[in-house]
Length: 310
Ligand code: NDP
Ligand code: OXD
Image (cartoon, rainbow, N blue to C red; front, side, top):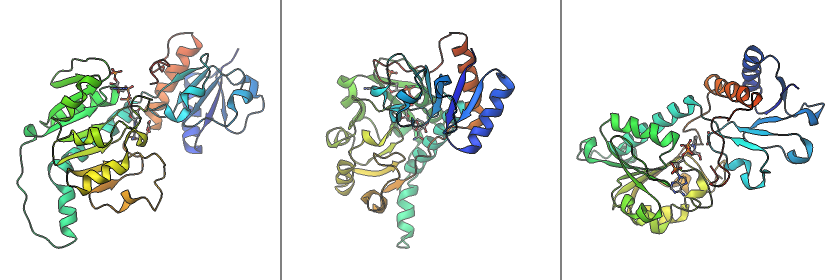
């Protein structure tokens, strides 16, 4: 029986991936949501967010591919166990994320955000600089993206620490793991980068208690998920001067509402969830390979472990 794929997403990406599948796997039947005649034929969905009532509408669904690296937006808890959920391991996402993190760690390291604010009052004031080796960058989440980011920071000479759920050994990175080592990790972090998936254990993990454990003057970059950060606690710590700057790419409500104070705060930089965008060509290759694996009954790369939630 042919594999029927339903893609839910923009036309240009649809056209790119439809063409790649037609070349590589001509037996696959491609559908672009919401145009599906025989919904019972669909066994694979590729989407950022799932269509409402998908479980009733597509009764023979077997696999959901996320178009992003994260899967929390699929409401994992509500997806039946017999449906595999696969995250996107796109080398294009990893490259984009490494660029975004290196860019903003350097901006913080070289006081760019301070000088942007000083420009507004025509203030000529030189701040002392220090070597990258004296700046400690701590990465929360040492998975696919955290490891690529760590390597790009090591190449710039930064001192890199990382924290994950399970213990790790990574060349050049001082690794911490588990809640019991979180405070020790945070107390040695000048620039905190959060690259954690959203789970019940990481929701609200960046709060008054944990952010206060960072040294005075530390800055944060949140590229994981907005729900991991208690933004009111961040604002309080910025206003008190305990924290210096925050670069925020993800928010609990996206787009971030106009009235949110984060937009106005002089020491907060808001970006609209663009740290790492799925790249059609490289991600298309990953999808083709995974659908091939699916049709052969092989394990798919990036299959989510439902017990841990990422
Ligand atoms: P991975 O699953 O490869 O890595 C996740 C890392 O987080 C692992 O090291 C894991 O530990 C660690 N982790 C998970 N839960 C905990 C916990 N409770 N305590 C400590 N460590 C934990 O994910 P990726 O690196 O591919 O992606 C990470 C996240 O980045 C995505 O889930 C998404 O939310 C976000 N993202 C944001 C983008 C943007 O544009 N802003 C783009 C792409 C992704 P362990 O190694 O022990 O399993
Ligand atoms: C994400 C992504 O998971 O854009 O945020 O890949």
